[in-house]
Length: 122
Image (cartoon, rainbow, N blue to C red):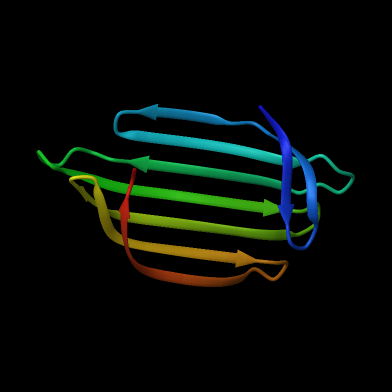
């Protein structure tokens, strides 16, 4: 359990509480974290990551990641996103393709982004 604060441009700083659940294995990461503002009109958020890294060869590891977040107020949607990455890791450098969908506001205005990524984890 976490207790702390959350900041968003439209509502400012708010105290919040969250629960965290994590499973970490050599080739798998699963994380879920629901969060709730501790105010009179709270928003609720669910954040999650699933990352799978299977060994494909001596120096090659597969890389798949799905990350999401959804935040709702008492009567409407605030913001959500979904991110997907699929690629490989060779000698510590990851590269591949990615997709992201962002939804904003009550009317669920959606923006999409696709592209390539290169990542070095230290």
